[in-house]
Length: 162
Image 1 (cartoon, one colour):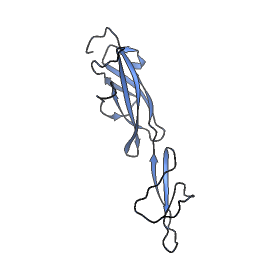
Image 2: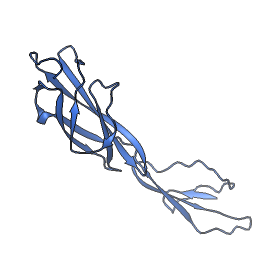
Image 3: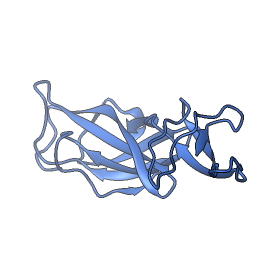
Image 4: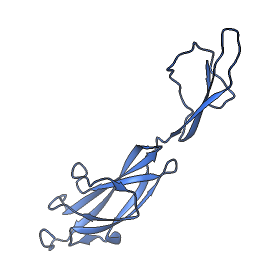
């Protein structure tokens, strides 16, 4: 049997097997692998092909809190979001305002979302970090994810718990 990434250049003939490792061509895109089989008499089979989408590049995007406001007195904010992924598209997103725990439920990717900031988590400057995780869809399974960050400063005179 032999394999090809382009249908023109073939691997050296190898012994038939049910499972074989093969290196796909470099880059994100739909990849087609071709295979052909040769019997002991030297007869070559028709070419069999299979395709798979390779998407190893994480999506990119932005997040703005309350239309880019520098601060808020409320824990309830509106997020304006963008997400791009050239190979397979953005599929899901989730949020956290500490970046390590307390992630919101995964939800379909969208251009806006309502979010409630957790009580109390602020850095040394009184700023709450907000992280958005975006996931891309590769076929029917989730692929790479990436993270964007925004900062939301709480005003010093903001009432506690709002």
